Length: 320
Image 1 (cartoon, rainbow, N blue to C red):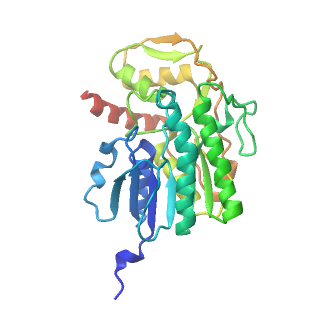
Image 2 (cartoon, rainbow, N blue to C red):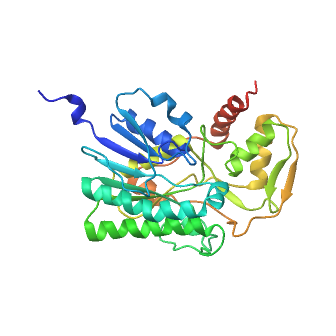
Image 3 (cartoon, rainbow, N blue to C red):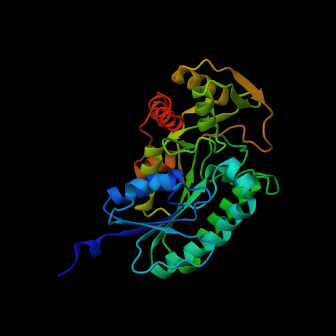
């Protein structure tokens, strides 16, 4: 008699203890899969997956994927999310960021080839660099400074995309590429260098809220449940070429800081600091392709998503 658990699809998530990776583990388990989470925890957090420990369909392996990866048994899906992803992390860990984008992607694609698994690469809107085209469509090649400080992340992801397409074309690996735009929600790290947790943390603590430049640069923020839904729909689709997943609701950083201060009820003031080198002036996804091919678009309004995220950070900071 066949064991029903052996019929379950098996998904490997690299970087599965990270902010986005852990939410993906939750979604894949919800979809009835077995999930193998691989993370070396240099930026991942065990707390993000602590609620899954003991689940018979979840396995955590602490491992650096730039080294040989062995996963016994069948694997149906591999979602490659291992990489430092915030400016503080990849500027502090430049070599590791380049290695996980190159050597790590190579190792994980090799596993996908061996297992005949569908491979999904977590790419990023940063492949567009400081864009000349607005909003950014998937056919835009980008404007990236390869030798600037941000190049370690941008070029690692651009290389990972090229390697993914090479494995698709030359080894017939079933590949997917998601270009992830700014995403937020519970499990973000308070001090990870991104604007949103910085703004919320500063506002909740009554500190000045730091905006870089004059605050006129724009970003578009997608709530994590919407992002995960788009990624899952891409995973089970046949689309090979990159797809933007993000929320096109664009806002200036000054307006965003004001919004956070208002929603937290803080008396914080906004202060301005020098804009970091190669910081993009605009960032907004064109999601026409995702709407058409995946039937996906974001559902959570920024006001609602921010309230949920603020509540999470209040718990982190032990604020009533």
